Image (tube, rainbow over all chains, first blue to last red):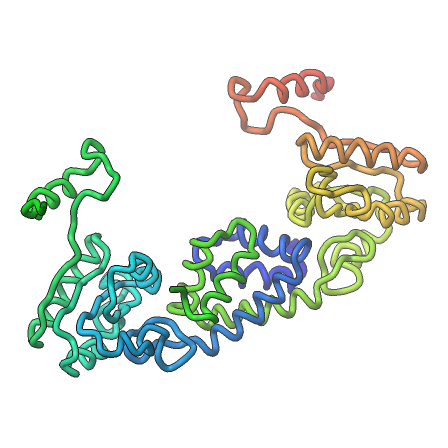
Length: 201
Length: 201
């Protein structure tokens, strides 16, 4: 005994979402069918539109439905000399929200992860090379995550970038603002010590 | 700074799924866009089909894309004299998998829950009345969940059913098979004691 074919198909389709197993998919299907058909139809339409129309920005690889994303289109950013390399579109948003960076971005859409079969080709490094070859940028900021994979990716890109005439920097590791030293892990604290700066008055 | 309009719309639409907040929706959107466009398109199509075509079985209110569900269509079940009342389609599956029940079902699609605005009208009790009025059934089995809401719903339906000439039963409460008495909660143990049966050799 199973659900009716179409209900079963809906449940199976929902399982393509990350973190959604059989039970969650079932719960989602019942919720949509019983309480939110309008939401389900809206999701269906948006999904179709999104899967068809959203591509990557030609310059920075961020998701966009146009040829160039909003940031790459901005006249102020067009003449930027700093290129910030991040892993995901969410990282772009996070950095934009600080208001501290006025340069351009390059979104890797992941990190090197041989176990998952993600190699240099999947990170669009050929497009990065093209961007660097324009000679527009004087500094490349490596803002990948401070994880093992992020560090490895940063190292790989740093080596690749060395052939171009640009400064290469990595975002600072250290104690987070508002944190207490007592609860900071030893690795971070070691980084914070070795990366200390002269006190500025 | 936000994501491009269509990406943002996709994230917002995904939030209609139960248990999915802003961060999960973002993760799902990125996953579909970056790693599983085919799955996303398939989900979109299935969702559209499901939202449009899946309705309730005319007899038992279970989800089905036809007028009658598979169980209500089955010739063996058509002449059944037992009607098992459950809360959700998943409960039907669970009981079917035991292989112990050959009667028909009635699916409430929820339970009485005044706080959530779910009253008797939302449980399709008028359809239940019609089913009972046919005189086909000699026993109604109340198989709602052993929760406060489930018990209240069972009680309400029992009172409603009293006007018809049918036996009314409630599934047994007691210690689960394979459990250890030491770890069973007091309420359940009290039920198990008061519901004891003569030992059958």
